[in-house]
Length: 65
Image (cartoon, rainbow, N blue to C red; front, side):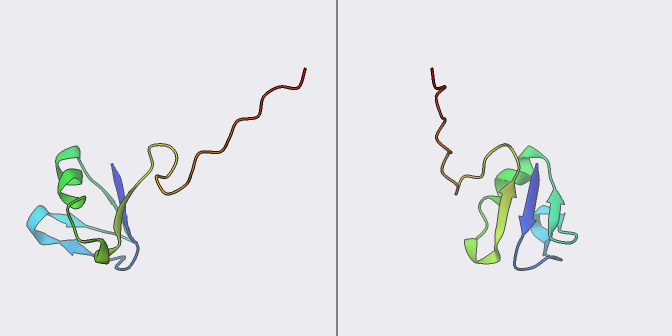
């Protein structure tokens, strides 16, 4: 799973053993669960896995017949 650190590209979270490089860290599911618990002020968020959670889904257009 991929996480990004928007505010601190070289962030190190020592207690769970994560080091961001250029603002990106690839982690296993167990570590991902711990990263999700971090305060939002750190700017750490999960990326990938389809559409972003903040963006509403685009409406689908039906076919004109």
